Image 1 (cartoon, one colour):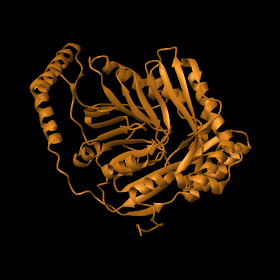
Image 2 (cartoon, rainbow, N blue to C red; image 1 turned 90 degrees about the vertical axis):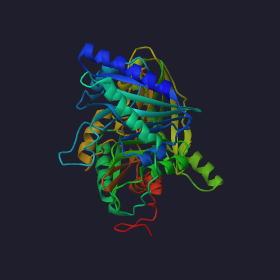
Image 3 (cartoon, one colour; image 1 turned 180 degrees about the vertical axis):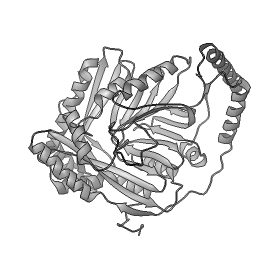
Length: 461
């Protein structure tokens, strides 16, 4: 640790000189290898903000604790504004920095006070402490925003005190709350379905994705984020696990199978995921279900709309776009999806956030045409989606990163938990099958919370 302390001091001194010269705060950062870390243990035993992301294949795991830098933006130009502010800070730093970032589904915010108040329309956070595992290599990055108003020694003392707390974690009792359902969202979903079908009949849209919100009240305000994420990480193989927890009593988390975009140098990877059926228990039934999904006209039509839209969104940035002609099967623990991987090579210097802005929302989460669908959803849905169905992920100072679509997700707000599921509605859609699909999509979060046996107005039996 002595060498590490020396390096951290040198980085802070360098940032302090720049802050004095430039008359503005400057980020300082240092990264070193550590033996290992248990992300969920750290989340459970610290009362800081937490940000978590693990890739679907579990090769990458990132946990951020506390805030070194928080950037926010709102309005129609939120992606550009966030990119501009991030560019100003990242050019100050000689080392590679990683940030977590998330967005609201829409810039339209309902006037009443809602549960998404702490999240905003666009946020980017550089954590003070970033635990990162890539393969078998574990690292810890310490970052702080250095101002000339405070001495180098003061920054060093603060970081040393906080690092000491992370080094001596004590395991508290894990809360085991019970839950009471306060809203099942079924009636609202049925109403949304009828309005969506009418919009399609009137040829306003080809497809529109409606969501269902289900809300529970907990018996304990200390929500078990760590225990819930550990369950999702173990059970939802093939899904990305994520958490954005800006405050102890507020957090948004989920287990999504859907990557929005991954950028490595000039190479882009994304995917169309649309079309769903339940995953049967027996192997014989499973093969039949896959075959049916691959040939089901309603699901194929829904999927094709998404593929075409993604290709169209990437075309202005790309020299080449590659995708198989027919979809494949993507399986999660509870459902099968139609899945088409899409690869592109950029021929511009477009930023990752610019590409995300072009892609979001894909027809898998909004509808087609995009703008008309989003406008219709403002009237059709009676709740604020917040960050549900939106881009969430990480990006680096080198311009690389990976974002997912935050579905199979839930919001914690004090003693309330709201979970979300959506369905793509096209001309052939039927209400009962779409409603059943929402139940399938809600099941991973319900299982993680032990809600499988909760009845309306009651607690787990």
